[in-house]
Image 1 (cartoon, rainbow, N blue to C red):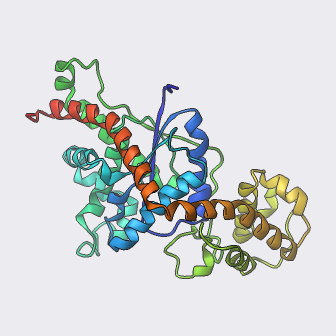
Image 2 (cartoon, rainbow, N blue to C red):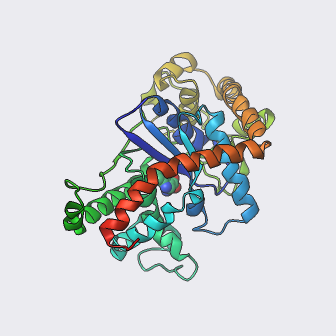
Image 3 (cartoon, helix red, strand yellow):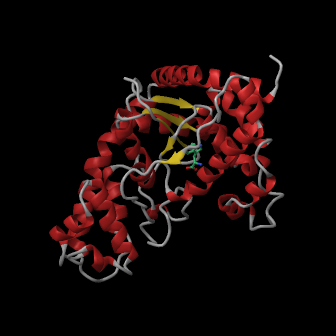
Length: 347
Ligand code: TRP
């Protein structure tokens, strides 16, 4: 099957996968493989922009690839691979370092958060790679001339920068692109791909914070590999207010923790929040939490079982990732050859 649009997305192997990764990203990737050409990457080169223990890095790389497959990505339909096996990511990333401007990088909120403000108070502490992170991300996408990128709101700024890099490359090398027979732009300008209403999963302990692998409290995050008892325990101890559930979504306003739990229920069951509240409105948490725990286990346990089966077969995982990298390279190589010629590298 040939599709007109190519999708690229990636997840960093820098921690255990959690419910936010599943509902916010991985699960959304699955239906796209039937409507788009899809590449799903484990971005190990991005992960090492902050220190990663090498043993953990490997384990998490396999775990993400296994989660992609266990959640329903078919390695024959989607190209599933880890970034470092296609060295062209690094090569194009370098060229983009020479296209992007220092000022663009300095404005990235994700970098400022980690490096400590505009002046970078922690700049002795953070790696140069962290600064260049967005230009490697642009290389991930543009190496395949991908046009659609399914990412959450927190990546919007990085995608905007990718668009700026594509436009500046096309502009700076316009003459050479034409001289080499190109009609106009070499790189497409990619768009964020919206995949339905955004489910931003929040911490179980604080409804104003994202669910995250770096949370100080282990009770705030449901991991994809948690067993049934632990999932039930975390949901039971989740912070809530004392009120009953409202009968419609509007009644969740100002109740961030309640909104989060109902949102998770709706998302896991593919139902609307109003529909869920139609069922549970007027009930207390003593009824809702056990129902949410049962639903979470019903959805996550089969995926966790399949992930465990897959990661225990490293030979098979290596085959899948090697095959994915080879297929990725067949797309990347001609693009990269074009870039080398455009830039003026002798080869
Ligand atoms: N920066 C992304 C994140 O933290 C991960 C990522 C790297 C990515 N390269 C990408 C996402 C290319 C989409 C496309 O979530």
